[in-house]
Length: 79
Image (cartoon, rainbow, N blue to C red; front, top):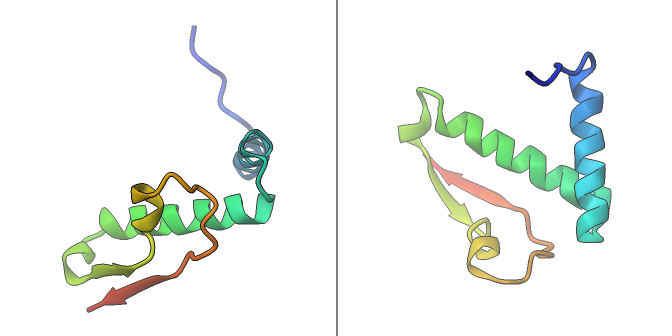
């Protein structure tokens, strides 16, 4: 049996992000910002322009560190 598709996708995404924020005991705005940044980077990565950018900045610190509460969410690109 297949899952039914949500009728209001933005509301569904928001609800899932709110649940994630509760699970992490984090502020919703931080989780929302993280989601927006990661989706932007994903979309850029699969675009035809991906090879023209180099990601620099603090984005990878989150992957390297056990601290998931980093306040720095800046992304710097070089063209």
